[in-house]
Length: 408
Image (cartoon, rainbow, N blue to C red; front, side, top):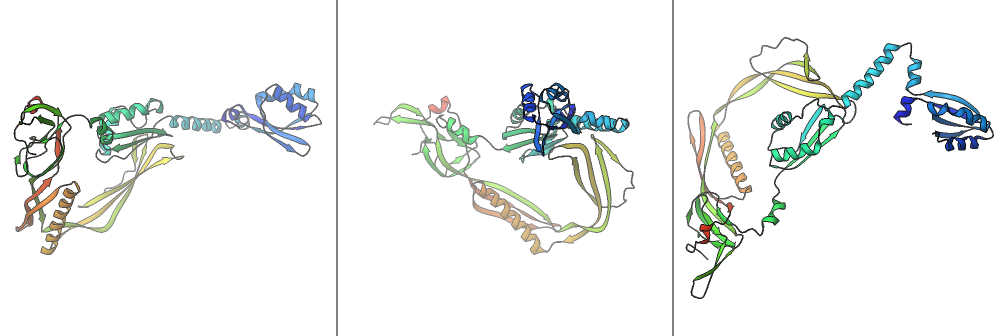
């Protein structure tokens, strides 16, 4: 049975006699649909729509079979059965219409995979671009939405928008297409420049021409390895120039300032055990809450949990309730010991240095010292580091004329 059969109504019939096979052949010849055909003692039972049932009178006479209705199903029989309960029937029809209307709108928007771009930023962008809570599903173009998100946020390497039920799911992947674009740029001639100011700690050139040597002081943006190779004759005269893609390992020594202050005394929350609960109901974006007396606590924090009603896996409804809990606490002043402060400052410094090393930065010297004041301890100083960062630049006409300052 399909949904159209339910709307039109159908009956279950019992066919008996000596020519049942002829009756079924006549039904097939006249293209009358029968389903759930089953043998039953000396008869057969089957389902047929009301429209096709009205065409069986002639076929019954031709095949000399006996026909009897055993069951009635579908919307017409349902309405006839409850015709005296009109309000009940109208309420049922209104509920069906309401479900169809709710199913044609978006009542939930989810974001997954975003780390650099926060969810409030993305939700604001969606609102400004016509994607909002309660919009019609027919107005959502998932392909166009995915393309617009990639254009608006270049750090998104992949975006997928899908509609399932009343939920719009947006999944993103942050990153770059370096793996895809690198082969296209592999043969483009270019040079390498300093990403920051400092002193050259080491330089190893695989392709190109070195313009600096270890120990040289460089400025940010200064060319380190040229992508122009000079071809000379036996006398050292430049006879030709060849452009290549510069490639080198360059370590630049520089200094990074470090500063952190840790207070000797700090405040710690101690909950008293008193709390107040409240439930906020939200229907179609409108908030409904019972008026309650707010607690007159001097210090408190609020916890909330939002839940949304749904009928099926992804059929969310525009009905939400928020459980709000307000808890009272007291601020206690606690003093760190000297050993605790030293441990905190040292662990924070180690964490900072570990993050640098994970980025490929080498730490040569640690000149961070701790100074004490009446209210805090201050860790300050500089870290001497080596940074393997260079910037790729295009080859300029002036660079092609460089012939000196070359180190092999």
